[in-house]
View 1 (cartoon, rainbow, N blue to C red):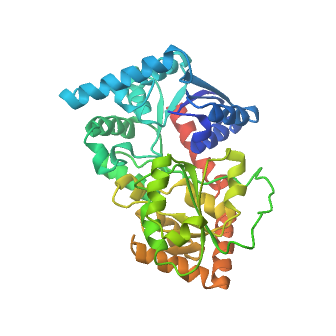
View 2 (cartoon, rainbow, N blue to C red):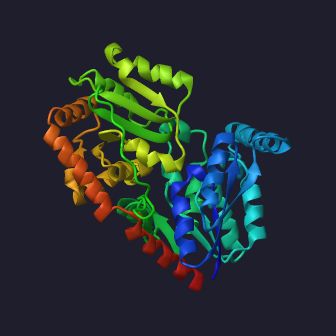
View 3 (cartoon, rainbow, N blue to C red):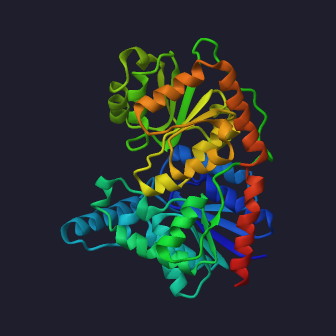
Length: 404
């Protein structure tokens, strides 16, 4: 039995992939600990509920809800930002709160294998490698390629890329969420291709639920993420609604500022605004049932951001689990899924409001086709895109890293 430490940059409930990773490694007989950060009371309650049913441990590295710790960490980040903008002096404190505390926690844990996920974790991983420790990396996001152009100006992207290259070349345990991203990382860094472990969900232990549907709203479209904000295809959706003939219902789920909500709804047609609901996030154990109440899932990733183009996000696989027909933008990652299961919905020919509106209308107007896509989506989850088929790859890579 090996001691394995998984480092994340936020709350546990916001990190479904590390949760599955922890469970798979614990089920394989290892002693697994996950360390992250706390900053929200509701999310902290969700974290505790997850851990209560887990065979592995979770403990925050720092609690940013009260006391002097959040003041100190936020001041460090603010100073780092000022220095970079004024003199391009880069510091790890630019990449989230508590990087130095994360490194200290990893050193104290002294695990047989430490697996990093976040931007700050990349730096921690390179420091641990320099100390001769075993390190793994999960490129669930390709951070140096994951920024909108306006955000790249105030970020030392070259430093992120340097850390990513070190880890990609040195880590025996390296994962990516799609074949496209794995191949791109290997080519970009002249490194071995990371193992492909998709962001799918388990069949085992899935709660039984009977979706509650309302007969008065017609076809229901669903989009979700941790955060509702710009650069996620929602502006295109609002523009598409001007062209959609059917009176569809739209539910957006995630954390959303009031200002962005108002700006987004202002872009929608006035007659449709009453059918657009912006709802908060739900606990992880309620998400599948929440999604399954809808008919069509929207995966509107932006192909102009390289990481977004190459990845396959959680939401697409959540839609398959919930039995929703999928409408997806033609990113390289999402093409992978549709190449294997074309019957699950509509892969847009272009990321435009006209193409999105046509896809929505084509499914809404053909009840038999919509039902067939929904059945194909659920079958794709049951037969192929599930955690039971992916977890063995992860465990195999961890065992190889531990043996090295």
